[in-house]
Length: 293
Image 1: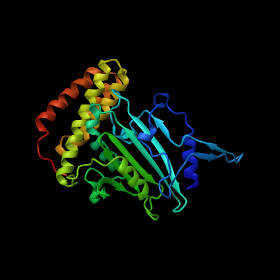
Image 2: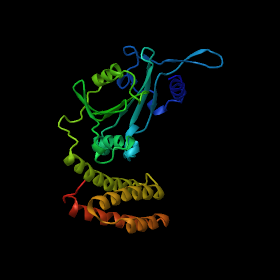
Image 3: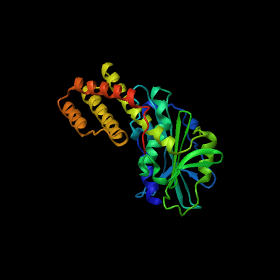
Image 4: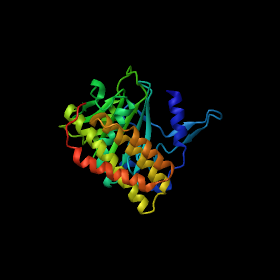
């Protein structure tokens, strides 16, 4: 617990992004104690023992937790806010991350990307391996596992993590309820992680991967990224698309991947774009076909 606090205080010492220096932090974070949980606003120097005031939060221009799922953020600026609370009563630390997405075209995938990131973190796989991470909390639906609470509130993503993955301490319900009141979950009440949903998620991911390629090529056309980055990002998404196509549609992808790798190594953007157009045409014809999990 003390080590977690020291690490977080070190993080809080990072210079705040100038682009966010005048942001209304209180719109996103609760900058006060919550029940028995204390909002950290000071740190003690381990050498001099002097107490110093700290910001109590960090801000950054990034896409937060969904960045790891390939969230496209080059055509807009997202803002992520983090803070930390700790309770000496239950000896528990809690980190809160709130990301404000700005309603760009890519935000249509937020719910999909939240689910993707949750599955990857907990190795649940596309079919969740029999585990159901959806939970009702105070009338709201959330993704929950091992003391991590994750949900979406329109275009705001909230993640709360407690330093208790063994689940031996009381849940930080005070923290979760406070942020749930501030950002009610908009995860659909009708969402059921049944086979039909899993099949739809797989097809949506294949859709999204081709969409991501188009977004990167558009940025290249607008001269906002260089060729190397656009080709590399498209190559990675096309490989994921081929993995899904092989697994669920039975088309071997090894030769296609080798061909794409050759195009990437020789900086052959025309070759990569030609294969992308080919995959998009194939997808139009085959996306509505039945697949098995």
